[in-house]
Image (cartoon, rainbow, N blue to C red; front, side, top):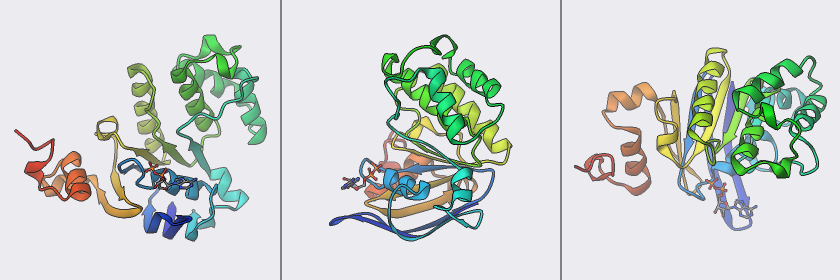
Length: 242
Ligand code: ADP
């Protein structure tokens, strides 16, 4: 379980996250929606422990910056952080060593296979296309089998096959009881997959709604998004326009 309580982050005069609180239960997929600059990356980087902030974040009751919590949480950054002089295989090996993973090779091979990178094992980070870099980035985030996985715009730059692989992975991870938080500004990329949606705007958590509650309200996710972020009524949104 991931608990975020009263998290506030300021960059100088910019209030990127303003008193944000929510709890994500185990075995759920939550999408974090918001326009560019809403504070999504800042919130994710706060959860992973990369930033200083005010407030409290715990993972299964442990402070998020504790070594025990860090082992439970995985992160797939928006921009792949690859080393130009390491090969694809070496990236996976490096990560496995950092996390002290045992018997990781079979899993690494299965991930490379799944993301069609098996024939790229000897390629260096800077020899990969943007999409391949993002796929390797995803493999690296998945290799340690985190209990909680944070993904910042994971679909950007992926081809349709890879997008399908990522969506299948979401489903598998949820079925295994893992917790996923996926940020995006493209609503269509995640529709059908989520159990819960958080909508951020100007650093404020404007909506926190489960799929059941949204379906009960008769609104689509797109309608909710525009009603929350632009104050539009459902029939004024792009999704509701005839
Ligand atoms: P999102 O991920 O939703 O696009 P961000 O979390 O990247 O939003 O940004 C939230 C706000 O914080 C924006 O106004 C952005 O300009 C600002 N911001 C983000 N990172 C920094 C930084 N390192 N220094 C100063 N301002 C930043």
